[in-house]
Amino acid sequence: MSQTTPSIGDMLAATVPMARTLNLVFDETTAERAVVRLPDQPDYHNHVGGPHAGAMFTLAESASGAIVLAAFGDQLSRAVPLAVRAEIGYKKLAMGEVTATAELGRPAAEVVAELDAGERPEFPVNVAITRADGAVTGEMTVVWTLRPNA
Image 1 (tube, rainbow, N blue to C red):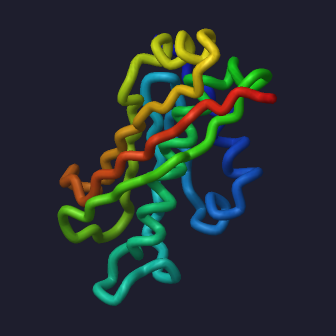
Image 2 (image 1 turned 180 degrees about the horizontal axis):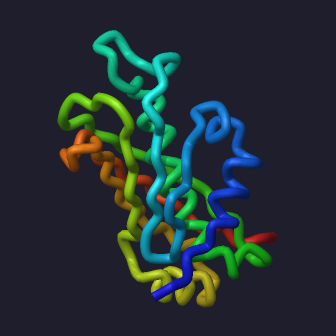
């Protein structure tokens, strides 16, 4: 089990303007899981009083980026992580604070092995967005790549 690395969340909050704008809270960031919260903020509500879809997208994408940095941070000297595509499904009405929990969709060692073989690996990160009562309000998959440095 990896150790929690709060410095990744701190770094993202400090360097990613949207994370700061939305006041995202990085609760857990390990190579196995990233948990990020979007506090309930009226400035980011939609027409029904819950978090705006764009804010939830940013929350989930930020959680996916946090786990990618935790899992592949030791590869940054030779590759740049980049989001390739994302798909989100809004399942239930989200109200109040929402939390995104991200997990890698492939073993990190498998991804690094492809990088070692000179390939540009792609891998999914699966994210569940939940309300305070635990109901899943959204699901997102972000496909990332590790682009080898030239």
